[in-house]
Image 1 (cartoon, rainbow, N blue to C red):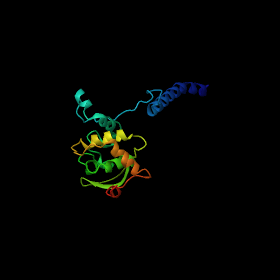
Image 2: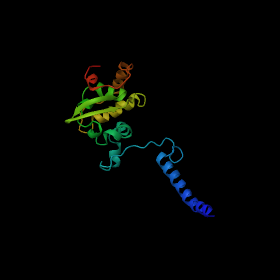
Image 3: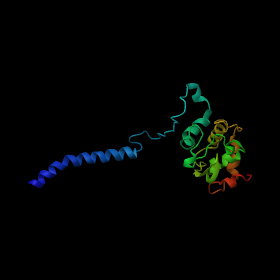
Image 4: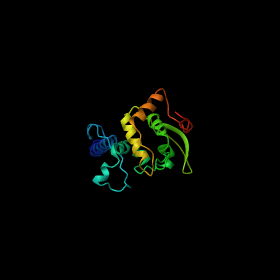
Length: 184
């Protein structure tokens, strides 16, 4: 009798624990298509950025949208990066502002290895986006980066991106800083 009363007292506890485990699992996994709309693709929003007005929202063109969706999660909305987390700044970047083939190569094929920026050694990796972003999106986002964050680089055209894509089509891995310093 003592054993059956104990089992009876444990039943509500087991039911509550089961509910908690299931709820935590669903919340942690955020089951795609069940609790979110298919295609729901969140974008990173810099909480320190000033609130944008309607006029600001259209400033920056399509490159700003690509930057917000793809780049800002690492390089931040300010373009300052996170050197302590091995993410270099785009603000004031010689790579971003110089020869357009350099940032195009980085976006297409990625980047790896140590670099020195603002007195800090950054040893991170950037993913390749050649299979994700179109030539137009790459031109748009690089034009945005090269003309924002205090940068003053020239616009990047779709033809610029196509030419670099063709010249580097056989490339298998990410670029290093030394490789990017070599002419294309």
